[in-house]
Structures are given as C-alpha cells and as structure tokens.
Image 1: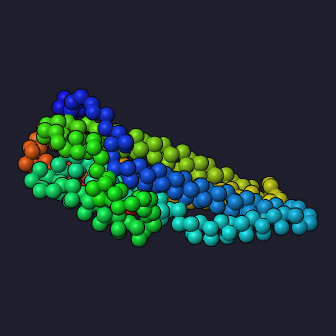
Image 2 (image 1 turned 180 degrees about the vertical axis):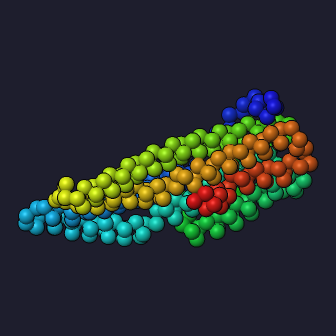
Length: 305
C-alpha cells in the first residue's frame, strides 16, 4: 500500500508545463461557466421579483405594482433571449472539453500512455494529429481557437517539460503519473464530491422549508387566518426557483458521478503501482484517462439524475 500512496519524490508538474492552449481554454471555460451561472441566477431572481410584484398588486391601490410586475416580466423575457444568443453554457462546455483533451493528451504523451506507447515511431506527429482532430470537432460546438499562427499548432503545443518527462525511465514516468496525475485527480474528485453533497443537502433543506411554509400559508389562508397577498404563491415560487437552481448546478448527480470516479481512480492507481507492468502500461494509462474524461463524467451524471 505504501507504493500506492508514496510513488516517489515530487517533480511539481504544473499547468505551466502543459500545452499553452490548455491554460487559455481553461481560463475561457471558467469565464463562460461563471457567465452561464450568473445569467441563470439573475433570471431566477428577476422572475421571483416579478412574481412578488404581481402578488402585491392585490393589496396596493393604483398601478405602481402592476407596472413593476409587467416591467420585471419583460426583463425576464429579455434576459432569456440574451442568454440563448450568448450560448455561454455551450461555450463553457466546449472550452472545458478542449482543456481536458489537451491535458489528457499531454499526460499520455509524457508517460507513454494510450496511443503514445514506447513503440510509436513519431510520438510528436501522433500528438499533433490527435490534437488537431479533436479540436476540429470542438470548434463546431463553440470552442474558440486563440492560437496566433501555425507555429502554435500541433507539435507547437508540446512543451520542453513534456519532452523531458517522456525521456525519463519507465519507473520515473510511472511515479510522476501516479503522483502528479492520478493522486491529484483522486483528491480533486473526492473534494468535489464532498462539496457537491454539502450543496445538495443545503439547497434541499431550503426548498423543503419553503415548501412547508407555503403549505402552512395556504392552510392559514383557507381558514381565513391570514389574507392579503398570496403568500403561499410567493413561497411556492421561491421553492420552485430553488429546485431550478439545483437542476442547473446538478449537485446531486455530480456527487454520485464524482464519488464513482474517485473510487475507480483509486483502484486504478493501486493497480498501476503494484501489478501493471511496462507492457500493459499504455493501455492502463489510456483507461485511467477515459475515467477522467468529461464524456465519462456526463454519462455518470445522467445515471445519477
């Protein structure tokens, strides 16, 4: 078990050692992700304010609240149209997929994994061909190519550190991969699963309380204890907004997916540090990278929904 947890001295590989396009795509993915969540959050808040204004029209004289409600409902329509035109979610997912493709190919290249096994004649050419093929697919989905010229394409994305790691012995490459890739990702998925679980529990509690309050308000109004604005309707709308936000963030399904990936990566890490030989190393790395792919995560999320 010691070999599985302590693969060797750290080389401290960082994002700076990966393809430059990875860092750019990662930054754009984070930017579009924030924009997407911010747009949905604003949309839900404005819609809830519009519902509140509409409910207050029952108690107020004049047309002030009616005008406010109409303006806020119009704003929700405008926000929806703007969000659909900007396609932030699609761009976020496209840039995230590009970043993960670049990262995965870089790691496979460095440690002789997948198609970059030790017997391949020209690993640089294979890297260039695989990379450009995948990026062509993502370009049609909203990925924006920020490269300035042909020198930044294909083999231009292979950094000196990537070549230095590839030139090391099998034992050194194995230790680097087990520590700086598999162990790091295992911890990452574990932390993400815990964070998603806490968020799911928190939002479930909030929506449950709002639903209970809405039921209480409806019963009190039915028995004539309270009157005026439709408090039950407002609380129901707030609960619905909470449910919608959970659906957008997918806390529950992501908890399920990330927990499974963490377990699979830990199993793979132990096997690769104890039983996988150099002959089976390339296939083992390819399988480990498949477990970390966005497509695999999305497949698990669908089953956890």
